[in-house]
Length: 125
Image (cartoon, rainbow, N blue to C red):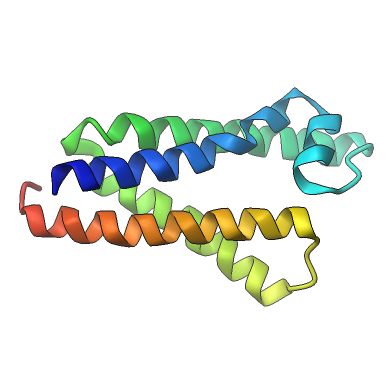
C-alpha cells in the first residue's frame, strides 16, 4: 500500500512539473497551451504560474518519500487538480492543448483518489 501512495504522489507531481517549462518564455507557453502570450503582463503571470506548479510538483514528489508530508501533499494536489477541472468544466470552450491539460489533470485525479484511499487504509498517519 505504501508504494501505491508514493506512486500516486509521484505521478501527480510529474504532471504538475510538466508546465514548468513555460517559465522559459512566451514561446514555450504558446507551445504548451496553443495561445498567444505575446502580451508581456500575461506572459509574466503565466510564467510565474509555471514556477508555482514546479514548486507544487517538486513538493508532491518529495512528499511521496516522506510519510509525514503525505497528508498535506494529497490536500494540496486535490485542491490544484479539482480547482482546475472545475474551472475548465464550468468555462468550456477550451482548445485542444488545454484539453490535454484537462486530460492530464483527470489522470492525476484518478491517481490521487487511489493513492489517498491507500493512504487511508495504511493507518500510518
